[in-house]
Amino acid sequence: MTISSSLNAGVAGLNANATRLATISDNIANSSTYGYKRADADFHSMVINGSGSYSAGGVRSTTSRLIDERGPLISTSNSTDIAVGGRGMLPVTDIVSVNSQSGDELPMMLTTTGSFRPDADGILRTDTGLVLMGWPANTDGTVPTYPRDTIDGLEPVTVNLNQFSGDPTTNVALGLNLPATETNFDGSGDSLDLSIEYFGNLGTSETLSVSFTPTVPATGSSNEWTMVIRDSASSGAIVGEYTLTFDDSRANGGTLASVTTISGGAYDAATGNLTMSVAGGPIDLGIGGLGDPGGLTQLSDSFAPTSITKNGSPVGNLVSVEVDANGLVNAIYDIGFTRTIYQIPLVDVPNPNGLISLNNQAYQVSADSGPFFMWDAGDGPTGEVVSYAREESATDVAAELTHLIQTQRAYSSNAKVIQTVDEMLQETTNIKR
Image (cartoon, rainbow, N blue to C red):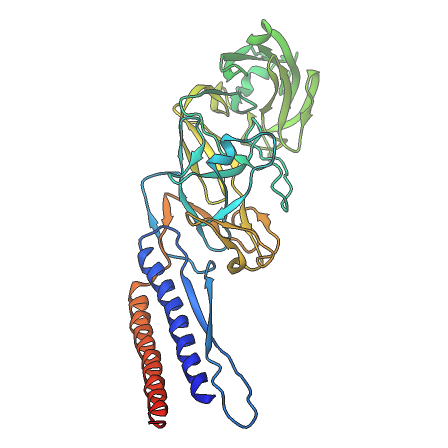
């Protein structure tokens, strides 16, 4: 009967609006939840084709989580409070799986923000047990190439504060002026000495002793020096000996014209580096390229080191970590040097709204979301990693309250339909009296 279908439609309307009320209440309840994604209820009409008379089909509702909607970012004082500025999600797992790991791969979940702090084991995790995942870097701070479509290589980001670490020297750049007068026929022939500190693999302070001996000709000027380099870590052994010849032309006067290797590593004219093998491994000593006024020069009558720069440092104590926009987790030591220890990729899927919603604003890849791919932050479709920041809830309370009023009116109207149908059925029953 048409009147019965009206009753069914009214009941369906009550159920649909009750579902919408549930999503609204969920959204309002989580209006202060960091990283919360708004739930939404959609209504769809149901059409029943009758023969000769109209039959009300009613309405059905579907719910979805709008994961692709992002809340505003707010700043915090914790360097490992992380949010994503744009598309992409952070890979995480749960602390229960980490603690019970038995050689199997950890399950990967996704989130868009988190307040990660080291626990007793140094694992970066949230209060709700989400553990940040990343690719470990090599000891020299470089990140190897890992597969992007599997979780192979991902591991919990672990920070051992107060851990000691050394930073060996691998590169020294030498800026120095040698006196041109010493290569004249009346030069003294005395060598000029220079000491350069570097740091070994164990954080110890070592010394490169460099001596420059002029070639004194019988007449005129030779513009030639012999450079000998000794390593204190090798008991003063010679690790490099070179003949330096300087240009005396008007265009390039005072710059290197040629470098001849007597012993030790070869000179690379393109980079201006000498590669020396000291006790702890190779060190590149930059003396400048041919014709380069920024390296070794021979001008005037003064011996003057103009600049000596090097990398490396003595042993330092790890005091904090920070995450940069590219997702690189950098360990900061109390002596000033930093080292990359992890890279956090950003995970993207074709349909973020198809992800499976889990507790604590975490999500899981599903058939509806499509396969995941891990990008470097800032590459491809993904945004950047923002540290010292949290993502607020995507709920707009004013809009939800407006929807609440609309839902209440719609619910009341459907209840009125049921009341009217009931009165009409009562009238039909009274006809028999």
